[in-house]
Length: 248
Image (tube, rainbow, N blue to C red; front, side, top):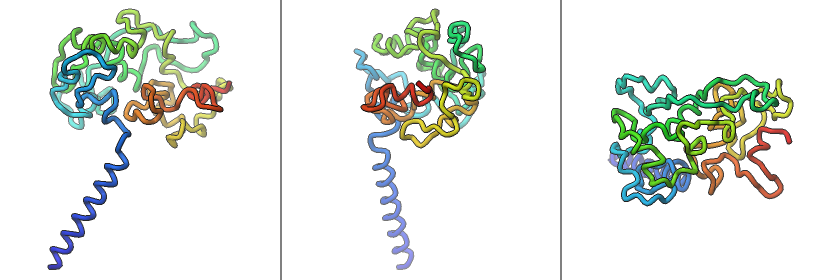
């Protein structure tokens, strides 16, 4: 009898915890977002019969991450974050102090860190199905092509493979150091939106990366945006996203 009571208690507790987890996750996170490649929905409404058919794993996270190395010759995991995708080998023209004299902080010569991982899809040079043990379908399976051209606006930079000029779009891989440039807020004390995260935890190397502005796993950080961490224009706080980092 005692065992039966304990079993029922454990069952109720488990169901209760499950309900709590489900409630907390409802409407947030990656599920149902543009980065959910299991729901058969095109991120931009492209005219494609089965937009996510290329994700033959049927898994949500595996398109980008895998918890066990599959022995891929390229050793994708060396790119960090248990990475499971091919990365771009393109050469980019970086936004740097040659282009903008106001940049006096240390910068990488090519995108690094998380930005390099984002560009494995978003520069349009790597087939979107080149993950896990799959070889990928070549240029016909790049993000630009697989969704019927509907994602041109999300190609970085400017949706043109070969141009790859970051100067007009994204200043990346620049160290966030307000001791060099006094026009930057304190990275050790300035919160990013309502996330509770301060600026310096967004990149382990304290560099401005894609993840500085975008929370790729949570479309609800700033509803109705492309995964922005902060709404750009908030009543009473115009250009809120920019002014999180910049003192203007």
